[in-house]
Image 1 (tube, rainbow, N blue to C red):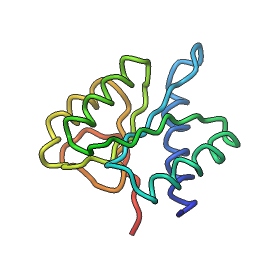
Image 2 (cartoon, rainbow, N blue to C red):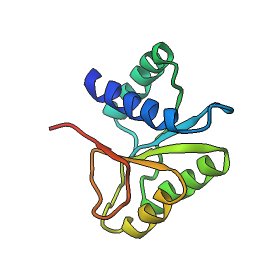
Image 3 (cartoon, helix red, strand yellow):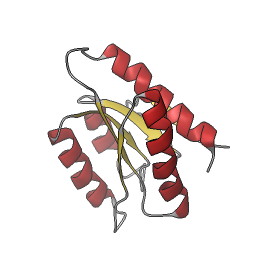
Image 4 (cartoon, rainbow, N blue to C red):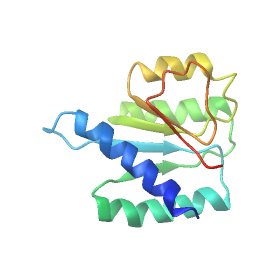
Length: 127
């Protein structure tokens, strides 16, 4: 697992949470593009690194990994109070309009795959 990737994701969440209201804890979520060894290691590392940094990430790995499944999971997270949502879009081009709409409601971070005109606050990926 690329520890730097996890640290960058946590740093982005901390930056956006600093801008949020200090009256309530900030809820952050990550929605992956499926289940894989990379995302499993990411979840384990984010639990440890997040605890050290004071950030809790709710990591969801959809199965099946479809744009529709991601959208359903994201809606549940937003309805549950998530104000920062990081997404690794399954099909960025197909999801462009949805991601743009989502960015108007929460602080959106894209992971691994960038989406043109998504309105995201940040993109976190690896070379």
